[in-house]
Image (cartoon, rainbow, N blue to C red; front, side, top):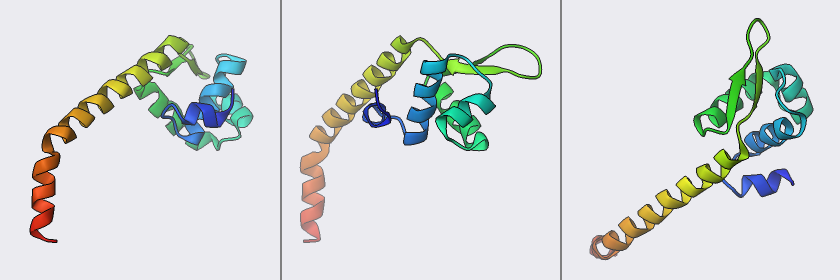
Length: 109
């Protein structure tokens, strides 16, 4: 599986790199994940946060060195399904508005 395959599913390049790296090596410190993903460590923390907001990444462990890792890959499927549902809703909404938008556009053409 390649970064570009994951990017097509709605992740950025850095999100895809961190996600795949964590999937391959398992939970690890951010230092290890960032190094293996070839992402700056500061950026990796930000990326982990955005992946967490999508339900794809979590922090675990106690103490000074927390570990980070992907959630169940089913969460990724659910995330993409949710994105599809939102896109379908947007498509339906634009379908209802398109004639009004065209009318407004013609006023200035």
